[in-house]
Image (cartoon, rainbow, N blue to C red; front, side, top):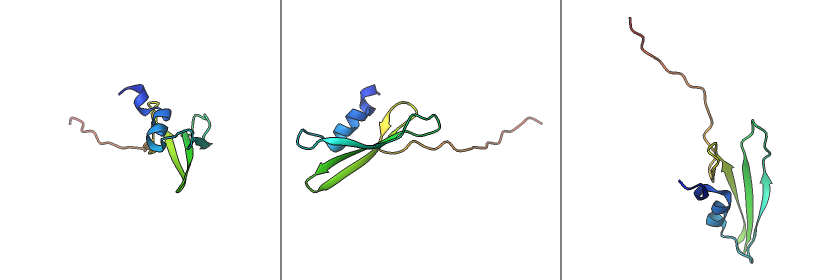
Length: 82
C-alpha cells in the first residue's frame, strides 16, 4: 500500500471533494496524548446542508473513516504434554 492511499488529505478529497466554492474546515480533533485515539472531524457546507465526517488515525499511521479496533484482553488454551 502506498503511504498516500490512506493520507488524511487524500481521504478528505475522496469523501468531501473540496473546491474553492465549497471549502472544508476542521471542526474538531484530538490531541497527542499517548492514551488517546486520534481523530479529526472535517466539515463542508453544501447547498443541501452541512456535511461532517470523522477520520480516525490507525496504529499504522493511516487515516480511515472507521475507528481502529480496540485491543481487548484475550485468553488462550495451550495443550501441554503429559
